[in-house]
Length: 124
Image (cartoon, rainbow, N blue to C red):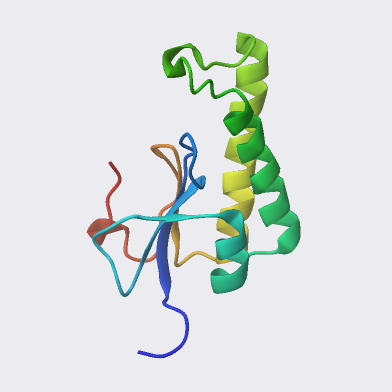
């Protein structure tokens, strides 16, 4: 197959020391692939403005990671975490708008957009 794969689903869910996005395509429908915001721009035509905002949002998350004591990694207070979570939800909504209705978009486990083949797709 030539060209970029067709995106089927994307999940915005950061994890420590990895990209904040998880994708499935028509070429690998049954496995999640970790993706960076830059990958989304290069392979799936997500705007540079949105990918920059997702990258910044993820940096905020990565900055609270304490490799010496991962269990203590946390936002300084509940209000800061709530603002960060709401910003992520808004970014996921914008991502859904840019990708179009055929792509399933989730934010953590919250479905933001069903996508065209939602009955065949699943989240963790």
